[in-house]
Length: 378
Image 1 (cartoon, rainbow, N blue to C red):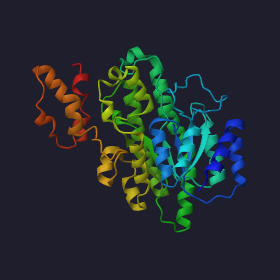
Image 2: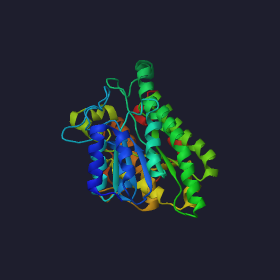
Image 3: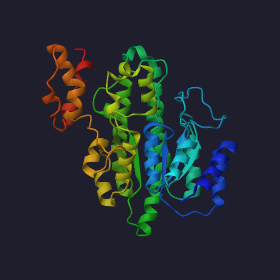
Image 4: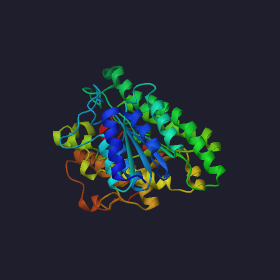
């Protein structure tokens, strides 16, 4: 594992001379050979939560994202950072190292064709392996209502959410898969029965049911299908895929919207205090990555809901709780059904009913049948 001094040295190199030179500098340093993970969109939000949890689980984690302390690495459409938060690839890498892992920061813009290919090639030259790829980078266009009608959003919404959120995910997989196949082959040749390489695509319940807008749902459904179809071709090579469904997540951006007073309109009045932390998704990925080869390959291509994995694999969020799955009655009734009932009846739902909701999952066929009640405009 790398130590804090080494990580600080790399961060300084990245700050001054860029990621290509910094990666080259590491080639002369003797390190142990931990499993290697690459996480995109890892400077903040769900990607950061996953990167930190993989790092604390013993992975050497390459943290990819646009947000950087390097003043020469600024992008015109980069989202603002909430006050007093250092949401950069460097801070994420440093936090991983503080947790006992090994964090490596690389600032890059995945919207630029050829960028992810170059970065992954540099990483593979050094590490000679790639065990986990997590695609979490995502963006929405500024100044356009996320809940607007698609014909009023223009191509800006489509290009934003499905450029970085779909096209570049595909490009990242194209570049990573040959390296992961080689990693799996090397493990097989050495009779290494450790968990096989894993591609994790971060999606959402929008892949199953109407959420936010048309472009968003199309992109998420495509991500789900990408993971599934890749699994068919990769199975014979010993590489697994998974699609991750976080629930309502307390990302830095969502918390800032709550502070700014824009959260209720954007979310449909969901209670963010009941949401999951980004670490919850990270713990889900770490658990999946620890499965045996047979168990992981049996699940390859599946949609995995973070909250449902927590029950199955016995892990909790950072506060020791297990938030309910979005398709559980414990989530659907208080957030969507009860408010509608109270509105129509003109009186509150009794407490005994609110306090005794079973944690029962609605079948996907039912969940996918339409939007929640207050979003249904029929």
